[in-house]
Length: 453
Image (spheres, helix red, strand yellow):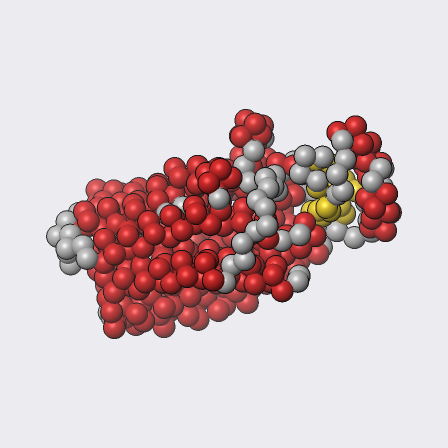
């Protein structure tokens, strides 16, 4: 990457991470806090407050991305960050659960992920874009892990209202970062690898392999959010551990989960065993939910279940986007990822609401039974999933050419050894290739692209 690309990638990954931090920071302590404010005695309201963020995010992230094509990337990002800040300050000043729900809904309405991704695509060359997107993906995982540890520690000093105010202040600071640190794109173009193509939505939504993965990310985040409507309270009740000390549980658990995740991903990607690793992780998720239905009243049982959950969660969070990339049509990757991200946000909403309602009506065990049902269906779908091809995506910039020459170039690229799929867009000036993980003839590909036909 050149300095401009690196600066844009680091800055936008940080802004993306802020959104994740705002969503997850309160997760390990909110259920405890909410029981002490008016309206929080109804556990269903606690779940709604946790999940409201996901509903508005799911509804608005695709429209925000499309608006950035028309009104400009930075304008939409500024608007989203301001909404996020307003929602944070509303939640920080709330005196009852209902205003917290309103604040969380406004936070989620600042759905800038699609606009951030589009701006990143504008600021990076095709051959470096996958690396830039990977930086954003790793930031998401890092922010989640940081939230699990930092949330309980901050609770001791500033409480949940202080955490909301902190994220609001950071959002305002992010406005300055966008204005000063992030370069202005010379020109904004449409990028089918990073943005939603409305005409391709129907095909993506009918693709059974992609639907399996969309259900998976929905289930993963629904189970996660449902768990955290009751886990903080269960840890306090069974371990007699103050909420500010819960980081002592999450820190070693998260470190161990990351230590196991890394070799698992290496085996999956390098040894072409991604489906096997994926199925094992889904199985582990199901076992975690079943364990919690039995062990939620035992402190060390909860700790053990948290360890297995985060191992599964981290592996699945890393493998699902990779599977989307491998299974989506080359020129519909952005559309597939847009639907995937919307499914994730809907999972946050459904999980929060379902967890709260089930805990209120039937008790803690019902929450984990709900997660077990979602996970069991996912395991069945994962077992019947097509084994993903051992490919990676390569993108190349093209000189201006007409449609006929683009079609001819696609035919010739398809014949190159190791090239599994080709899409050449004359309009975008990009060649999208899916190539074997090893053994493909890059020299021949570059020769054809440099020749233009």
